[in-house]
Length: 265
Image 1 (cartoon, rainbow, N blue to C red):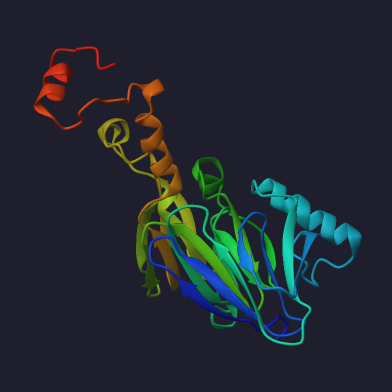
Image 2 (tube, rainbow, N blue to C red):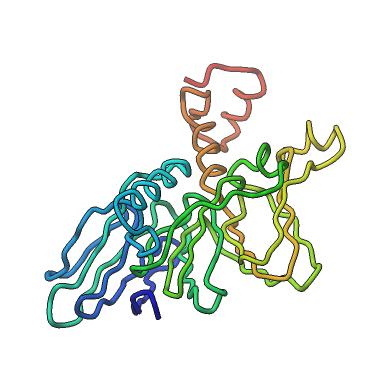
């Protein structure tokens, strides 16, 4: 293997964290701010880009860091190295409720494409870059979809997403339509594009957005049941500043106040 070979264990159900076991001199890279805990003997270092050999030299590292800015991520990543003589552990947690999906890139033809905020951690040597969709429709209307991250290598990588994660294996020519926000990751052979939902009534009153992702096999697709953007919009709509404050929510009295436009404050 070209990448470091790490062992891991997932803990929890809906609010998971991943515990990575490092042998001496093994390293795992992670998004800044994802650390949960680590054993004594692990050295933490802030690095440009992903630390992979493919970046090579200062300019390569600078270019890699610049690409991360395009995806909305930090310029820096953090490397955790076991500098001790025995096995050590370091744990990383998801930033919001959901699942962590371990992906062995050696079993996925060396590459996966994922949402720009889905990457959590990976073995050192895994290259974290950006993947531009070639089709113009995906470019203008993809939302989360146009500029996506690509993870390349032969080591372990961990991605996270909201709610429940479902893996769908597509046969050659089989097509799946997915809400753009629900798409988490796809294998490199899946053909990906953005399409208009069709029909003016559906577009205006359907409540499901104007566009969806069309994914054509062969390959694998990972879908999340609760995108963070959807969760955040519901929380925002319920805040007092948006008229979301309620007293005795669900009660008959509250219903009467709502019916006659009573002041709820």
